[in-house]
Image (cartoon, rainbow, N blue to C red):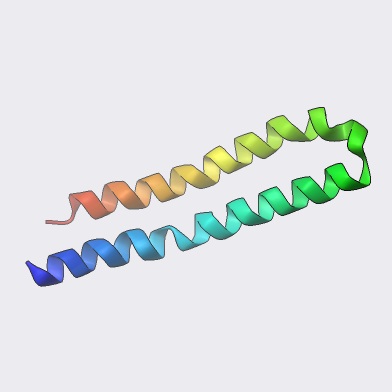
Amino acid sequence: MDLTMLAKGLAIGIGSIGPALAIGKIGAKAMESIGRNPESAGKILVPMLLASAFAEAVAIYALVIAFSIK
């Protein structure tokens, strides 16, 4: 039981590091782009949200794997 909980914690912890870094970088680069060219905010918003959603999906997959560990 204890090792199972440790495995679940490690799975979600390690599995969410990559998406967290990716979402941070996506947001930083989008804000940098908008800061350089404020008129492009509308064109940057949709791709930024899509990239964030795809990165978040990886974290959700890690959560599903963590729940499937028995």
